Amino acid sequence: MAVQAEHESPLPFPPNWFTAVSENWWALQSAQWQAASAWQQAWASMQQEWWDEWTARWAGGAPID
Image (cartoon, rainbow, N blue to C red):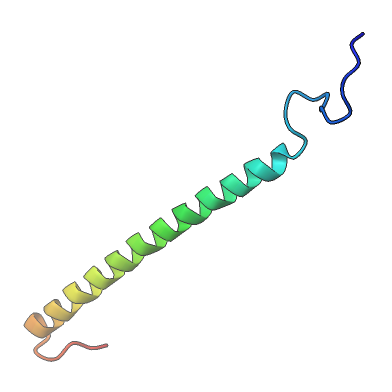
């Protein structure tokens, strides 16, 4: 049986693997939420513009905000 050095881990992965993986996962999840939020804000602005144009054209007046 081989004797391992004190600083080497007997595990096939580093002991702090969960921290490394979870930090990367949270960073990825955060980027995805930011992208989804930006996409939804763009659609909301477009929908508001379409509504304003429709009300000005067909409802006979200024847009209702």
